[in-house]
Image 1 (cartoon, rainbow, N blue to C red):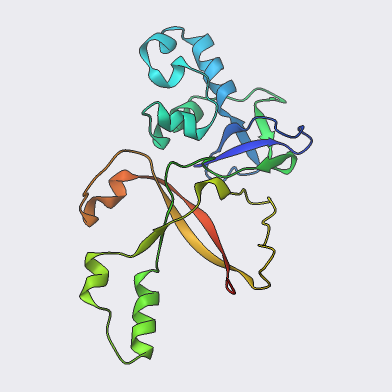
Image 2: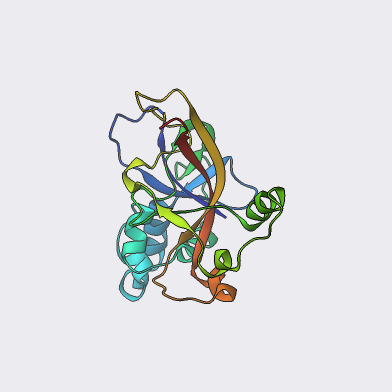
Length: 203
């Protein structure tokens, strides 16, 4: 299942994002999760009293995580959703603009490289990957205020003529963790997304 912040292409500037979901294989139609929540509560009023997920409006993934909920909890809204004929809760992908998967992450860590890439670089130098690379993965903190959606423009710094991209995979940590062993890392990951790390090579 995929989750995304969406709004209509014709929406006015500054229009709020809506959190939507597309079941596996159904990426042409996205379900408005707030509409799905309201329908579920209308069918069973006890949900709003008994379940945190149903108690407040579904706005953004940022807000959902701030309430202490995990990404996987949103799947319940989709699993119980039955679309009506010509349902305005089902949004056509062709009519939508897509935003970042999380609008303002509290932290963004970009790691140096994946193991295969590091190994290749060291082999070209006639060496081996240092043990320290495994003990202390190298990363830097990136700028959380410069997150863009898939169709948003990316502005090159005025002094740069060598803006380059680095296609990467990002993992969203959706629960507080500290010192988690590597073999339990998946327990803290709420999902994955494509991440394009733009770099000004000449600055």
